Every structure is written in structure tokens, then in C-alpha cells.
Amino acid sequence: MTQVPLTQIASVSWEHPADRAALNSLRALPGFDLAVRKIAGAFGERGIRNLFLGDAVLVGPTQRPNLFALYQEVLQTLDWPNAGLEQPQLYVAQTPIANAGAVGFDKPFIVINSGALEILSYEEQRFILAHELGHIMSGHTTYRTIAIIVMTFGLQALPIVATVAILPFQLALLEWYRKSELSADRAGLLGSQNVRASMGAFLSLAGGKVVNDTVDLDAYLAQAREYEIGGTSWDAVLKALNTALRVHPFHTVRVGELDRWVESGDYSRIVGGAYVRRGDESARPLGDDVREASDYYAREARAAADKVTDVITKAADAFAEAFRAATGGAATATAEDDAPPPKTD
Image 1 (cartoon, helix red, strand yellow):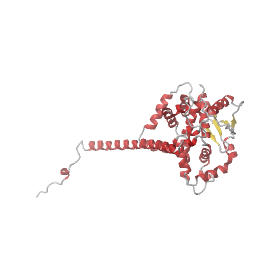
Image 2 (cartoon, one colour):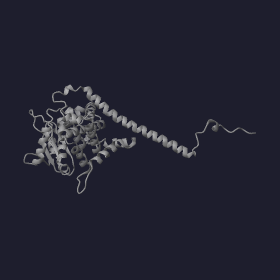
Image 3 (cartoon, helix red, strand yellow):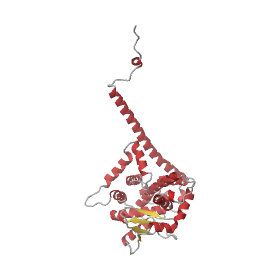
Image 4 (cartoon, one colour):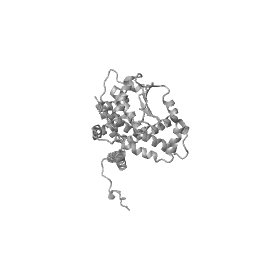
């Protein structure tokens, strides 16, 4: 299929409200900006390239030319800004871990692992490349690189100022990192413009390469819905604990978020040309971001509250049933039943 070029598309067109809300919370942490500058200054652009590219191969017209051609198509679809800006370099790194990333400070670049290329179809690779380009176009790479450094070395080993509370810094940074993935997933779909292949990428990343067998994307989408709405309030707590120190949301969560975005009609409207152009970002009031983020977290809070209410109701019913069984089904004792026996001479 031929992708529709999204001429002059601004990144705010695809950015998830939770991404913007989490980033605002992150920037509000006392000492956060100073800590970022100190960590970035300690590594520098050269240090980041040495950290990530020691065993990677630069993709070009003669080096993995098919992947290079696919990348050029993605750049054209998302209309990479050409005004004096070099296109981000693309590298392939040899590792069985199926992953990719966009990193760097002044000149961000993309690294895709060989393990990802082995399990992803051609169209799924298109989605991943557009996803990573979306990170760069949204300006995510500085904070995402800081997050990767934090996860790699630990905060105690980094030049971080004493005024920063370490645990809130780490938790807030990783919370934003996970939410930034939701924005980049939308960019990935816009660059791919193939809904089934884009969602199929999550199935491939979650379940690995399929050999002499078949997979069912619709069944996976049903699994994603079950993960999100199933379970008790305690399950919700466990989900939060399981993801608190992760840099990526679970694939089921991501495919569910992308599915809802498609169902909302926003994806189709953007492909149809209804999106914010570069230079017109100010036309989108800040209040819209705040309201959308508030609505998103309010929906999550309502869902959590509903689960808690459901658990409390079930617990009360179970207690009442147990009490009835223990008393042989007798009604609650009355005041007359509780009265002491009459005295006798």
C-alpha cells in the first residue's frame, strides 16, 4: 500500500495527553533540570554515541539497502523537516533482544536490534521505524537518553545534585518514559498507515517469531482488553508495581491504547489531512492539553474506583454469606434475645 504523506505535520498531532501530563510533572520536580544538565554534560554527545554504537552498523544505500529504502519512505511519510536538518542516522546492532530506540542529545539517532528485524515483518518494521522517528520529532530523546543512563548505571553512580529526591526523580522519569511510548506508537501508525501490521508488531514483540504455526491478532486484542479491565483492585496494585521500574509499558497496554485511538476516529482524521501543521502549534490552546490529560487520568481513576467498589461489595456479600452459614441462617439477634434471663428465687 502507498502511504499518504503528512506534509508539515506537527508532533502535537500524535502526542498522547498522558505523555504531556507526565512530562509536565517531571519538569516540576525541584532540581530536575539541573540534574538533567549535569548527567548530559557528564556523558556528552560523543559519550552517548560510544555507549550505544560500539557494535552497531550504520545503515545506508549499500548497507542493508532494503532497510535503508524503507527508512526513507518513513521519513517522507512523516515529512521529516529538511530545513537545514540532517536526517537521523539509523544503525543496526547485533543482539537477540527484540528492541529499538531513539537516543542522543544534539544529534539523535535510531538503533534497531537485529533481534527485532528477525521477528518483525517488513510492514511491522515500517511501524517500528516510524515509532522511533516519532520520538525524535516529539523531542523525546534527551529525557529518554537520561532515563536509559539512569537504568544502566543507577542514580548513585551519576553526577546528580543533592537537592533532587532520588526515588521520586527515578519514578517520575520512568512514568514519563512509558507514557512517551504511547505518543510514539501513534506516530508509528501514522508512518505505517497499516493498522493491522502496526498492531501486529506488538504481537510479534510479545510472542516472538512464529515457526510452523499461526497467530491470531484478534485474539491478542481480546487478551489486551481482558488485561486492562479484568481482575480486582489488588490486581491493579500488582500491575502498578510490575511496571513502576519498567521503561516500556506492557505490549498489551500499548496495543489497547492504539486500538482505542483508531476507534476514536483521530487516526483517520489525521490521515485525511485534519492535523496541526508545524508553526501552528500555538493554535492549540494549552487548556486542551490539560483537559485531555485530566480526562485520561480521570478515566483511569474511575476504572480503579469501580474495581475497588466491586471488591468491597463482593467482600461484604461473602462476609454476610459466611455469617449466615455460621448461624444456621438465623436472623440477627434482637434486643429481646440479648436480654438477660429473669432472676429466680
